[in-house]
Every structure is written in structure tokens, then in C-alpha cells.
Length: 335
Image 1 (spheres, one colour):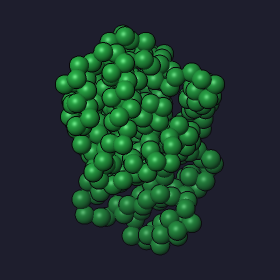
Image 2 (cartoon, rainbow, N blue to C red; image 1 turned 180 degrees about the vertical axis):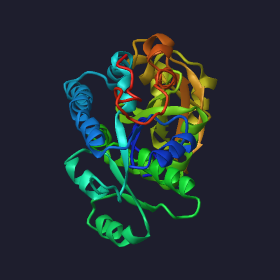
Image 3 (cartoon, rainbow, N blue to C red; image 1 turned 45 degrees about the vertical axis):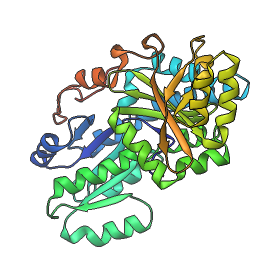
Image 4 (cartoon, rainbow, N blue to C red; image 1 turned 30 degrees about the vertical axis):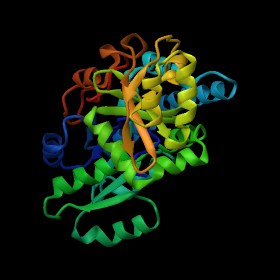
């Protein structure tokens, strides 16, 4: 899928026994990535193995939202509450681990084996003599990607590979949220043209975290400043239902005709979900051939705000340094 059901930022871990190489990577990798640098395999393994408890607690919170939805509680207020209350450390949970194959203490594949069922993506850096090993590891699904160190434009290729893996949906959480979507809704957002349009909207609004839900159908999203957004999605066949809802709150004949014509959408379901009695009309944009959408800001009091925003999380990060005899650096805030 071009536009995943669930996405949020994640950290990147690098392991290489060459400090100079790690320092070079720290300089050139995108500034908006939370990064940890390790020269010792044991420290890298220990760091990643401490994450499962935090990751499981976060996953459990999301699964609890879905359980309550099945019992009749609305998704939108629950997700907004989760974002207001969740600690920003969730942004730093590692999603990608990049490991050099050739290290004296332990080769890269051995390190990845030691990680066991750590759920993130694995990338292997290789030398010329290691490429056949990397191909075999890839074919055996032990790694998601390998990048030869001697490749031209290595840093660009490596950054692109990592970004693709960061953009992949988080498996268990994405599967959970998928349960809220009907087969028809899933088919709509899986359409490549619609997926590209949704991705363009996400980039235009700087959304760093989002979840696609089916009840009501749309995308709840966060930008890097902590502002929440609602992207209402409607199929053209449902416009008459919106007309009935709009008529029930006294909208004028001209406004109702604008809904029928697909020029505006009525956001009554969203306002009902957040407990607001001020629904209205918003300009509609076309997605694909038969889909319509409209974007609105969620009231600031219902979102996490700047104190729990991704931008604040990044500002609180320790500078990118190598691990040494001092406590491990780059730790993310527990705020």
C-alpha cells in the first residue's frame, strides 16, 4: 500500500566497529530521525532488547482502544485521548537496525540472530567479500535489505533504504486498525491513485503520525507540532446519506445541493464523535474517480499540543554521539 493504515516515526540504530564511519553517518543522515550509534555489539543488543516491554505497553494501549470500540466506544475520542496521554518515547522506539557485517567481536548476522524476535527491520552493511552472504541472508528473510559499503553514493542509497523501511506500516498495530475498515473501505485506500493523493496530503500538512479508521471513515493525523487533523473520506454513493444528516440540522437548500454536487462535505459524524454541536460544510476535493475528501483541524484542546509533539521530542534528543564508557547517549525523553 502506498498510504499505510498506520504510521508514526521511529528510531534508527547503527552498529559498526568503525567510529569514524558512524560519525560520518551521524552527520549525513536526516536530522528528523532519532538515531543511536553503537560500536560494541553487546551494547547494541542490550539496548534493543530493552525495548520490547515499552513496545508491548504501547501496543496494548492501542489494542485496548480497539476492544472498547467493539464494545461501542467511539474511535476518534479514544485515539485523541491516547495521543494526549501517551509518552513521547514512543517516537524513539527503534524501527530499523543497520549493522555492519564484518566486525571482530561478532559478525553482523550473529548480532541480528541475537536480537531474536525484535520486530524492527534489519539492514546489513557489507564489503565486497560479504555480498554473497548478504544475498543468502536476504533470500532467507533474515534481513530486509543489504547495502554494499563500496557502493557509489552509499549514504544516499542507505538513507533511501532506511526511509522506505521507516515508511512501512507497523505490523501488529496496522493489523489491529485494519479491523475497523470494511472490505470496500480497504479497497478504496488500497487504490494506487488514491494512495498517492493521500500521501501528498500527508506531506503537505506535515503529518508524522496517522491512523486510517472506518467508523467513521477517514484519517486521524498529527503534525510535528502536535496539531491533530481529521481527513474525512466519502464515496460518492454516500452523498445522499450526508444530505439527510445535513437536512436534519437545518442546512439550507443551496448548502444541501452543494453536498449533492460533491462540492462540499458535511462533517456531522466527526463533530458528533468529539461532542461538538457545531457541524458544518467543508470544501470537498476529489480522490480518484469516486472518492471525496475534506481536511479539518481538530480543536487544540483535544490534541496533544506542543508539549507532547514530535518537534519537542526531537529538540530534547541528546546529540548524536558514539557510545563509550559514559551512559549510552541518544536516549529518548520519558516525558
